[in-house]
Length: 120
View 1: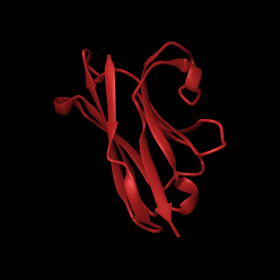
View 2: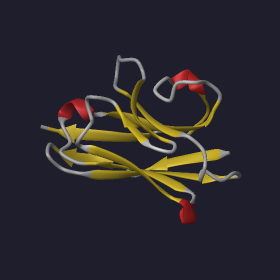
View 3: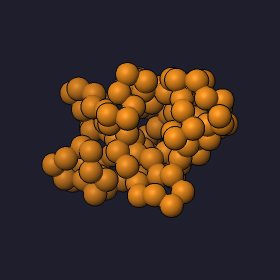
Protein backbone atom coordinates (compact mmCIF):
# COMPACT_ATOMS: atom_id res chain seq x y z
CA UNK A 1 0.00 0.00 0.00
CA UNK A 2 1.16 3.53 -0.79
CA UNK A 3 -0.04 6.39 1.37
CA UNK A 4 -0.41 10.05 0.45
CA UNK A 5 -0.98 12.53 3.26
CA UNK A 6 -2.33 15.98 2.50
CA UNK A 7 -4.29 18.87 3.95
CA UNK A 8 -1.70 20.57 6.09
CA UNK A 9 -1.23 24.31 6.15
CA UNK A 10 -1.04 27.45 8.26
CA UNK A 11 -3.93 28.18 10.60
CA UNK A 12 -4.50 30.47 13.55
CA UNK A 13 -4.98 29.10 17.02
CA UNK A 14 -8.56 27.96 17.48
CA UNK A 15 -8.92 27.12 13.82
CA UNK A 16 -9.48 23.80 12.06
CA UNK A 17 -7.85 21.66 9.42
CA UNK A 18 -8.70 18.30 7.91
CA UNK A 19 -5.88 15.99 6.95
CA UNK A 20 -6.35 13.22 4.41
CA UNK A 21 -4.50 9.94 4.02
CA UNK A 22 -5.27 8.46 0.62
CA UNK A 23 -4.20 4.92 -0.13
CA UNK A 24 -3.42 3.16 -3.36
CA UNK A 25 -2.47 -0.41 -4.08
CA UNK A 26 -4.50 -1.88 -1.25
CA UNK A 27 -7.73 -1.16 0.56
CA UNK A 28 -7.66 0.59 3.92
CA UNK A 29 -11.18 -0.56 4.71
CA UNK A 30 -10.26 -3.18 7.27
CA UNK A 31 -6.78 -1.98 8.14
CA UNK A 32 -5.59 -0.16 11.17
CA UNK A 33 -4.47 3.34 10.22
CA UNK A 34 -2.62 5.68 12.50
CA UNK A 35 -1.74 9.36 12.54
CA UNK A 36 1.48 10.48 14.16
CA UNK A 37 3.20 13.82 14.35
CA UNK A 38 6.71 15.10 14.81
CA UNK A 39 7.52 18.61 15.96
CA UNK A 40 10.99 20.12 15.40
CA UNK A 41 13.48 18.67 17.83
CA UNK A 42 11.00 16.17 19.21
CA UNK A 43 10.30 12.50 18.73
CA UNK A 44 7.44 11.26 16.62
CA UNK A 45 4.32 10.87 18.75
CA UNK A 46 1.00 9.12 18.42
CA UNK A 47 -2.04 11.24 17.60
CA UNK A 48 -4.89 8.92 16.65
CA UNK A 49 -5.65 5.53 15.14
CA UNK A 50 -8.65 3.73 13.77
CA UNK A 51 -9.44 0.06 13.43
CA UNK A 52 -12.81 -1.19 14.67
CA UNK A 53 -12.76 1.82 17.00
CA UNK A 54 -10.99 5.14 17.20
CA UNK A 55 -8.18 5.85 19.63
CA UNK A 56 -6.67 9.18 20.57
CA UNK A 57 -3.74 10.62 22.43
CA UNK A 58 -4.84 12.47 25.55
CA UNK A 59 -3.49 15.71 24.14
CA UNK A 60 -5.94 15.68 21.22
CA UNK A 61 -8.94 13.89 22.72
CA UNK A 62 -12.09 15.95 22.26
CA UNK A 63 -10.48 18.13 19.56
CA UNK A 64 -9.43 15.69 16.83
CA UNK A 65 -11.55 13.08 15.08
CA UNK A 66 -10.29 10.22 12.92
CA UNK A 67 -12.62 8.69 10.35
CA UNK A 68 -12.72 6.61 7.19
CA UNK A 69 -14.29 6.99 3.78
CA UNK A 70 -14.19 3.48 2.40
CA UNK A 71 -15.46 4.52 -1.03
CA UNK A 72 -12.47 6.86 -1.37
CA UNK A 73 -10.03 4.54 0.40
CA UNK A 74 -9.09 7.49 2.56
CA UNK A 75 -8.70 8.13 6.27
CA UNK A 76 -9.20 11.63 7.62
CA UNK A 77 -8.05 13.50 10.68
CA UNK A 78 -10.34 16.40 11.50
CA UNK A 79 -8.50 18.80 13.77
CA UNK A 80 -10.47 21.45 15.63
CA UNK A 81 -9.52 23.99 18.29
CA UNK A 82 -5.94 23.87 17.11
CA UNK A 83 -3.20 25.09 19.40
CA UNK A 84 0.35 26.26 18.68
CA UNK A 85 1.63 23.07 20.31
CA UNK A 86 -0.12 21.08 17.57
CA UNK A 87 2.43 22.44 15.10
CA UNK A 88 4.24 19.48 13.54
CA UNK A 89 4.63 17.35 10.47
CA UNK A 90 1.76 14.86 10.48
CA UNK A 91 2.21 11.37 9.10
CA UNK A 92 -0.27 8.63 8.39
CA UNK A 93 0.70 4.99 8.72
CA UNK A 94 -0.77 1.61 7.82
CA UNK A 95 0.14 -2.05 7.39
CA UNK A 96 0.15 -2.98 11.04
CA UNK A 97 2.94 -5.38 11.97
CA UNK A 98 2.94 -4.79 15.71
CA UNK A 99 0.42 -5.11 18.50
CA UNK A 100 0.08 -1.53 19.68
CA UNK A 101 -1.71 1.04 17.54
CA UNK A 102 -0.07 3.92 19.40
CA UNK A 103 3.49 2.83 18.67
CA UNK A 104 5.10 3.99 15.44
CA UNK A 105 7.15 0.82 15.00
CA UNK A 106 3.90 -1.14 14.76
CA UNK A 107 3.36 0.21 11.26
CA UNK A 108 5.19 -0.82 8.11
CA UNK A 109 3.97 1.81 5.62
CA UNK A 110 4.12 5.58 5.98
CA UNK A 111 2.96 8.57 4.02
CA UNK A 112 5.32 11.42 3.27
CA UNK A 113 4.01 13.81 5.92
CA UNK A 114 2.13 17.07 5.75
CA UNK A 115 3.09 20.19 7.71
CA UNK A 116 0.63 21.79 10.09
CA UNK A 117 1.56 25.19 11.51
CA UNK A 118 -0.64 26.82 14.13
CA UNK A 119 0.07 30.46 14.86
CA UNK A 120 -0.75 32.10 18.17
